[in-house]
Length: 399
Image (cartoon, rainbow, N blue to C red; front, side, top):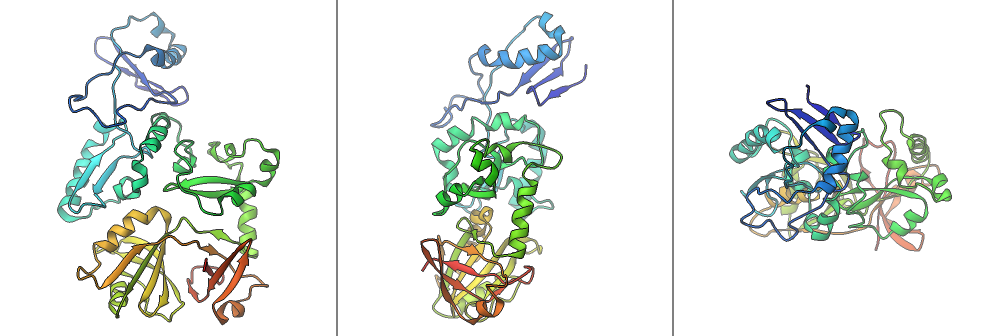
């Protein structure tokens, strides 16, 4: 008998010696335990038998393999395992403590991944890098908010079931139902009222698209983004219309969730520091915004950001939401120890507005000006240097 996996009905069969068969599986919703820490004497002990939950898994297996219904039961094994908020393991150096390396949270795949984890964690300890990108399992993809007990209790009910579900191209953290609305922008109610379907990045709720037709029906608004398919997604034409509107007109994008750091000094120290870290030349006139990467010794990207020169020795760094912890670790590990440079994680609201016939390039580049959006007044900052964009853009912040 071969090994059988059935993601739809969430069970697996594995042949054993002496004509025995192992039947296992994952519930759609699991039960978190040890919310206040694993007992010191647990030592991989087994949990009490739970036939009530296992009955559903066994019934699905018997439906596919009726012979199992005539077989003799030998034992039921109910165990515990460690899971992470996104179903991927945790490894690499801690962001809070230098030279403290972590390899944990294997999500039920400890035996399968043990060899690779051992190899790469040894390389990270010895050289600080690996010959293979480990960012998808890097501990720095999380923030302190992910240690919240209520969040973990909610999210970990869903993770084991997600582990054994069919992985569609849209599978990811944006599609989780639990542990949501940890962070929202001030515009969240207005975006929601406009029919936004939200995804989640590092705890922030961000619009994936605006489903106006479904919103008017008040039915299945969120489901549209969660319906898995290997073909053309139901939301494809909605996103197509939004893309064309952004490309041909003016679009305002809520960038509140983006990572933002303030750096300044009393002299040229901060300029020299950023020139050393950044691949692009950041020594541009005040008001410039330079898109650049921060590279490591191997030439790989550690941070992809926009550097905004606010004053002669005053800069704002804006980078993707998911790089928040990683970017701060990278900056702190290189900032001078003499305290000559001030580094701070700041929270500012930014939006993004491409060019069209009414908002002309000449008008944008004339000077910093104020603009009203809804009931808020914003300071507009011109001179964005980002040649990959199709047209000029403006960074807007609340005064």
